[in-house]
Image: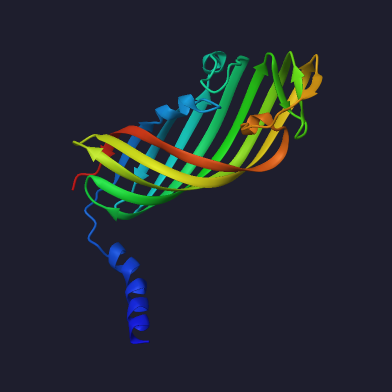
Length: 224
């Protein structure tokens, strides 16, 4: 019983001890890019800003845009291409740094995800049932998504001005996928394998897997 009581006391005191460590920080603002987003199924150019307070909290906002040129080339996992492509996304984020030093910080974060995708497709197909799919010569594709991701990560300030933010996380989103103006539709047999979320029309809850690296530049830092 004594061992149990001692263990419980240590577990309860551990978070307090970690957060009570002296924080060597100064408020700052950095602007960053996320290059890996260019290789995602819905590619975008992401640019963001993060304001780090003098304490453990920081607040960020990332904007993304998918240009037509990003959807014209076939992705490595898909031999098809879009005739036209555009995409917009907004990602607000709040971070809590449980350990932060002058040039290093470890954090947990919550990121909101709001996005809209529009494609004009050529020859393609989408899901009908576990044994059939709809094949077509062309269509208009729309997708709206709203959700959130819980992340863990680490941020480093490389000599003076450069920042590197590495993260991973999981989340959930409500997605609405629609195919309209379908040209020459044909129902064909379907052999199920692994398919992305764009393949399944309709409203549904989908898991979000987040990982990547942000590279930035400190544009302002309060003098200590």
